[in-house]
Length: 412
Image (cartoon, helix red, strand yellow):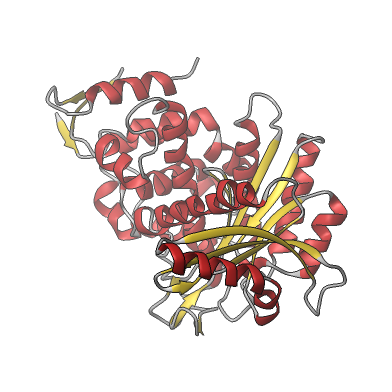
């Protein structure tokens, strides 16, 4: 029979149907094509595009050969060749603001549906990153911090779940629109779970007085980095001197947590600030976070705030494994759509990791590792009028894990 290197593509299809992610998105999109001339339905196009990204095919022209792959055809739900690169390219160019909104609604609703019972607390991680561009795309600007031309997308995660991937130009404040995004998320989450505790967690780029004040009025917790300045260092000065003396006496790195009351000139109130004071061979290294949460400073800093580093790993998965930075279209909305394609592909792989790999050695594997070991495996494909059979190698090193994942993702 035919041979494919995408033998794990059915796992993506099982995860997609388990979540209802792409079918939910297709229902929310307006297909303006003439019905009588449509050979490839919108849902099939979305599946073809997203599954291909998850399988490692970042470019539209990859579909010239990929459209003939029998495993991908089966995963998409067709028994004939898939859409051509020109048809797939038109899908990208058809994207607009309504498509971006619908995609984010689908991701948030999928996240909500993943809970069997109401959660006690949700921690929303906000972060911005650079998306380097190498052409003259609409909306690209030079960014001094990243020292290059780029976009500045905003990501929001809750644990490993991706909720928002919002493309923005880079000539803006890194926190721009974060307040509006937070308000929309809080409104929807509280509509579903009225008593859930919601916590905003972010670095100092999102420490904005109006955003913190809104959280205080709405009963939303926050723990946000605060950029160090001369006033903060003066307030923490006595403890910084004490830590320095302890280091000089012992020769070992010293850490101390103290609490301050601090109000910036643009703030209308003083807020609780946790100062992590550290002194080592390279000198003083103070860090500050502002919060309205209860609890000890060391616990909040080490066990809560520092966990936001996991979000940065998830963003790396987006860009390094799922091509979120493949924003090479000239116009704005196709580039936003490409960012969303990477997000949808991530959501499917994360579902495989969460639902099918729980308790296994790959329960915390990166998206690239899951692709390499479970998706990009060889298969002989035999298809007739009644069934499609995939014959995997008996020497596949992860065949037991593959069977376990398939069984866990199988409906009902």
